[in-house]
Length: 439
Image (cartoon, rainbow, N blue to C red):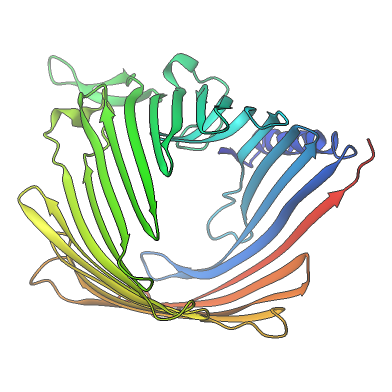
């Protein structure tokens, strides 16, 4: 995403960018089809500082998503903006572009090209790129090959035209094929560089006198190779496996095995294994320290009493270097409510949490009241005092017309640090779809 602080010249830049996007959207709008969603939200709460003084905070949020289609061409964008409507947290306004790209796809969908700010989900390559994305399908869509590349979207979300491409890029590819009926195999590769900004700091010279030094850290480098496979045996039984290898550090980054077996039409057994190494970039300072993997073993069951009433339970061991943690979760889900319990103990601390959520549609789903409550008890280690937390919400979704909806919610939080913290949320959404067909 791109983020622009809306102050001074930055505000003018943000407005020009936003207007330019709207103009681009309007150009093909007279051709065929335009659809999307616009929503605006208000979120308010009372904020306390370290000396106990408080002030009311009101935050405004806007979301604008539009797709414009003309034949085989599509222009897609998603814009998100936030602005403080109170003085207690400063202006803090930003305009963010999650994605803004033009797409071409031929009639039989065997070729697809995207240019602009493109989201990427391709095996080990996940993120966003300011560049291009190409996907080719063959063998009656049983084989696909994707390649993408361009400037890496910075984690700070601040758009900077002066970033060096050789220190800040994202390149990758993925091939996916159906090697047998119900069996899919994917191979992927990604090479990512993230530029780190220079900074000045005090360092000691040879006589131990403090001097100002300019630090120029190298760009963070990550290069991964991944393989993933899945098999659907039918009748509710399936398997999935994944393996990620760090080419720079020459070690396994992640391994995963999942199995789901339907014993009967109502009863299903689940089993998962995950192996994870810390995600440390190749030229990071932290590569000097020994890396300890985490191994997670989980088993569970699901039971369907009816088509709309289901129960589930899972138990997991999480192994750390010289220690472990245990995790238990169970829940019951129906059409209109969900109740669940989760608990853990061991290396990661002790936790017990209960959650209940419900909704019920009225007036032909034009009014949907909602409510949720949760209670948690936890402590970080044995011998430390127990902490408790209660949270609840009460609200409704109102749909007076097909294209409009109003979401209203009141939230409350109570713990040792916040005594009866009360918050309010309001969201108004509008969906639109126009088939103009002027060309």
